[in-house]
Structure formats: structure tokens, C-alpha cells
Image 1: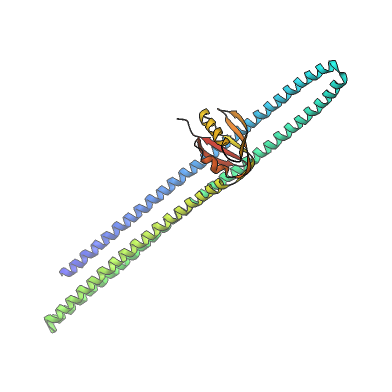
Image 2: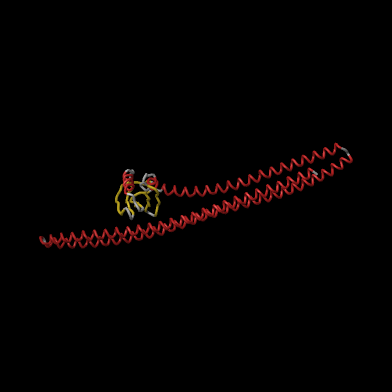
Length: 346
């Protein structure tokens, strides 16, 4: 009877242990699922905020271009006015030369206005195309992030399902083994009683020894099952970790591809506002020291943002070079332009 009670006690302990393990697995899965949902929500909010900032920056760039165009027209008008006054002064001396000068001036003014209109039209079309590309890139990034979050969620669901299946299988096996152990104990008990009544003490001892061996074998089977369960759970966790690392590696490779892109010829750098004067001077100095790169033009204001035009004599990884400069906080490629954010000068 003591062996039977012991078997029952072991069975109860096994059931309690299984319940505890199931509870721990479910709690872990719920916690991981909650973290994944929160992470996906944060990433979606960051993407939305990024898209909003990019739209505002595009608007500011367009306004800056409009101001530059107006300033160029004003300068052209002032220059034309001055030239007209000089032409009238010369007309007092030589009428024929003044007439030719006025005709040349009219032609130059017409060509300048035509060139200004063409340039404004071209810049507006380029800005529109850039905005379209940036919106499509933002949409594609958001789509990829949603897909990655979906894959992570599916991996968590698979891990949970596998853990539950393993736990159910283990419970089923342990119940079967416990049943077999009880049957074996009952059989051994009957055999022992029979042996004691018929063959004597020696056969009863042999029956007890067989019962002991069967109990040991059942214990080893349960231990082997526990090891298998741990291996399944570890494999599921490793798979989820590997998938997360692969997603991170894909994002890293995308950033490295942008950094490695080569630029040649005329390139516009848009410095995001507000701009710190000290950091701006450091950036200019760093740009002047870049081999095969010439600083052509600097325009804009500290409050509204600055545009720098540079020219690369041969293909160079300009994004990667900018990211290594001390005053630079962030570099983002936007169409043909490069958006640069400077560090705060503390």
C-alpha cells in the first residue's frame, strides 16, 4: 500500500509541476506578445512622426526656393534698371550706341526672364517628384515594418503553440506512464501475493525488485520528456531571436547601402533648422577638407534652414563622409538632396 501511495503522490507532484510549467509558459508568451504589440505601436507612431517631419521640411524647402527665386528676380530687375540708366547716360553721348545697348538689354532681360521661368518650373517639378518619391519610400518603410511585426507575432504564436503541444503531449505521456506504473504495481503486488503463497519469499523479493526497476524506468522516461520539452522551448526561443536578428540585419544593410552610394558632380545639402552658427562653421570647414569636393554656394538663414551646394570631382561616398563629421547628428538621403541635421552646441 505504501508503494501505491507513493506512486499517487508522485503522480500528483507531476501534475502540479506540469500545471506550473504550463502557467509559466503562458505567462511568458503573453508578456512577449504584449511587448511585440507595444513595440509595433511605437514604431508605427515613429514612422508617422517621421513622415510628418519630412512633409514639413519639404514645404520649408519649397518656400526657401520661392524666396531665392524672388530674390533672383529682384536682383535681375535692379541690375536691368541700373543698366538702363547707364544706357540712357551713354545715349546722351552717342545715340546710335544707346539704341544698340537698349536692344541688347531687352534681349538679355527676355532671356533672363525665360531662364528664370524655366528654372523655377524645373525646380518645382523636381520638388514635386522628390515629394512623391519620399512619400512612396515612407509608405514602403511602413509596409516593411508592419510585415516584420506580423512575422514576429506569428513566430510568437508558433512558439506558444509548440510549447502548449509539447506540454499536452508530456501530460498525456506522463498520465499513460503513471497508469502503466499503477498497473505494474498492481500486477507485481498480485504476483508477489501469489508468489508469497505459492513459491515463497524468494519470488516475492524478485517481484519487488521488478517493481523497483519499472519505477526507475518510469522516472527516467519522465526526465527524458522534461529534457525534450526544454529543448523544444529553447529551439522556439532561438528561432524567434534569429528572426529578430535577421530583420535587424536587413535594416542595417539598407542603411549601409545608402551610406555606400557614390555621388559625383553637383549635390545639394539641406541643413535642417534651427542651425547653430558654431556647428555650421565647423561643417563648412570639414567640407572644405574633403578630397575631390568643392564648396560652391551657401544660402538660406539660421532660423529657416541653410542650403549648401557642393561639387564632387569624382564619385565619393558623400553620405558616409558626412556621417563621420563631428558636427553632424543625422544624415538622410531625400531624392537628389541630402538632408543634414547638426548637433546642438552645448
